[in-house]
Image 1 (cartoon, protein in one colour):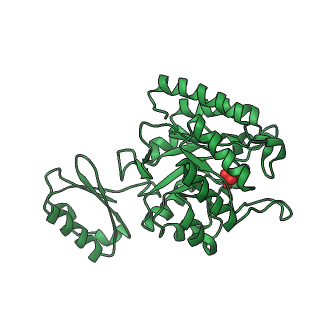
Image 2 (image 1 turned 180 degrees about the horizontal axis):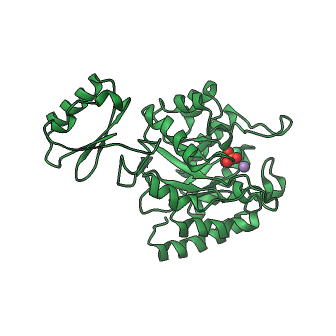
Image 3 (image 1 turned 90 degrees about the vertical axis):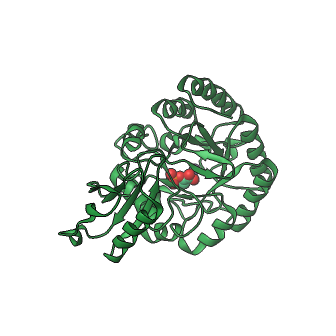
Length: 338
Ligand code: PEP
Ligand code: MN
C-alpha cells in the first residue's frame, strides 16, 4: 500500500509514520515527489486491520496497490523516473542511443566501434564480455580482458559502458568496470541474480525475457527495487512468437503499456528483436514514436566478420544514416538527441 502524506507534512511526521510502519513489520520505501512525499509500505496488509494509520498527523490517505508490482508501479510514483548516471539522464527529454558490437572481440574492433558510435552521437557503448550463447561451442566472450577493453574505450571516448552480467559469481568483477549492468533476457527471472544486483550501486538495464509477460517483467524489476536498487531501466528486446522470418517479435505495444503501468525508463533493442540489420532503423524510429527513452542497437566495423550476431549488426555507414534519421524524428517528437 502507499501512504500519501499531505503536502505540508514535516520531516518528523514522515519519520513517525515510517517508524510506525516498520514497527508493524512493513518494509518502507520513500518516494519524494515535487508536491508531496509518498511512503510505500510493503508487507502484510492484514496486520493493519483496526489500526488507525489514517489518523496519524499529516497522513492524507492510505491506498492499496492492487497490482503485484508495487515500487515499479505508477501508483507508488506518479512522476517518470530519471536515472542519472555519469552526467547523463535516462528517462527525461533525451532520446538515448546505446550502440556497439554484440561482443567485445578485440582491442581494435572495440575501439573502432566506440569511435564510430561516439562520432555519430551515441551516448553509451554496449558490448558483451560474458556472452550468453545458445551453443557452448560458440564464442563465449573475452571475460575480464573484455571488461578492461570496455574501460579503455570509455577512457578514450567518454561513452558510458553497458555490459551484461551473467551470474552472481562475476557480478563484483563486472560492476567494477560497467556503468550500467545489463541483465540479459535469459536471466530476467534469475531471482538470485536479481537480488544480488539489487545490492550494487549501479543502474540495471533489465531485458525482457523472450517468453515473459509484461507483468513478469515488472515483477523482475520489483525484485531489484525491493532489494534497494531503484535505478532500473526496462529493455524490450522482442518476444518469442510463431513468426520465423524475424528472430523474435518486437513487442512495441509494451512501450506505452509499461509507460502507463510504471514510472521506469524504457529502452528498445530492435537488433535482437528482429535479427536482421535491414529492419533495425525502421523499428528504432518506431520505438522513438512509441515513446521509448532510447534504443540499444548492435554496430560492428565489419559485420561479416563478427563473432556474434553479425547478421543483425549495422555497418558504420548504416548506423550513421540511422542516427541522422532518428535525429530528425526526435525533433518532431520533442526529444533531444546529442
Ligand atoms: C545482448 O544484448 O547482448 C543480448 C545477449 O541480448 P538478449 O539478452 O536480449 O538476448
Ligand atoms: Mn547480440
